[in-house]
Image (cartoon, rainbow, N blue to C red; front, side, top):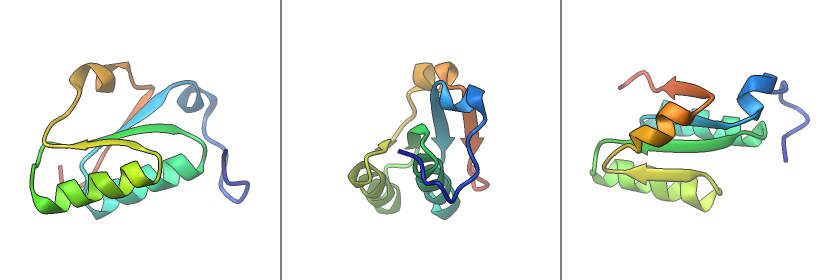
Amino acid sequence: MSDPKLAPLPPEWASGEIAVIGLGKSGVGAALLLARAGARVYASDASEGASARQSAERLLAAGIAAEAGGHDLERIVRSTAVVASPGV
């Protein structure tokens, strides 16, 4: 359910999944904000480091599909929108 305090998602974004690439601070923030707005989100990071794993765990706990250590490229291609974290 979307947060009524947030602007509504564009209809084309709401119709599918949004991919967030990069699980740094901005990637995690984008994924959480999009999910709060009612989007289905997939977030990933190529790094297998502790920080990326912790970020993926945080997003998974929030109900967001996330993985560290790689990207599901087919899933990203099917996404209605892609958000690239600035650090990528």
